[in-house]
Image 1 (spheres, helix red, strand yellow):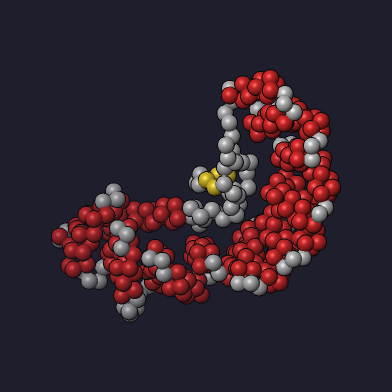
Image 2 (image 1 turned 135 degrees about the horizontal axis):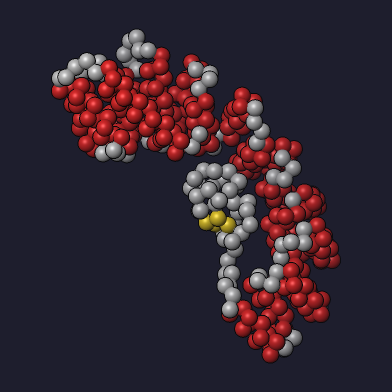
Length: 380
């Protein structure tokens, strides 16, 4: 469950509390009236005003548990989560709390700790709450986000699996990304073999797990095992040709280091045959032909790419460079004029489809909204 949904749920509960209070109101003294005013202030998001009224409410009536709970909620909304956690934690020492009320206190204590950056404490309380209420989907979902926040990928994996079984849902692609993150942690600690095991597990879970192939090949490269690295990249081209361009730099560097220059042309031609609706392989192959002095081949490919992608600025730039190499100045100038009238793509930018966060590289977990797989869309 996302923070937005949790926030909406809190508002609904607050509104229900206010309605019940109005219906069951038995007193006309200042204390109950002040509590109702505090709830109104919370609904209107006048948090400082609500805070003062709730302080007076609990001072007048120390048995008003809900007032204490909302006092903590307001403190958290005022960016004082540590103070909020103290308010909620102090309630737990009270005897004979109804189970529903106890669960509400624990739920808000989890949110306090999460807001305060105390993920370990938040996880401990969430696990306790789930033990007492195994059907609490909201807390189960919150616990998953906490495992992700802590980067405890193994626990996140098994917890998500459990959630999926309970909800009769499959998301093998996300589970595979957990394995990738766990593998990156292993390779980052110089445990290359253990990391590769995780990358292999990721691909078993989801054959099109792009980063698993890339990082698996990187691990082999770091150990100088170039043939194994090349094998993984070839498997990547076969499994996910629509994202083959993400491996092009790795492929070129690897094949040049191995002295296998002819394989580069063959691989790019393979990608063009398997996935002809992207310009990246055409551009790479054009560059290869230009470097080899095969200008006729480069020119044929450039014109073919512009037939397929007439509005692609990079393809037109490649054609201009080929004309320049051949000293065909007039034709280069003519193509440059065409380019001026179109938006020039300076950088490929990947944007998160959920929150709009931009990156020059595709990311598997958005650092801003914490959503998965939101960058694997067409680059802008």
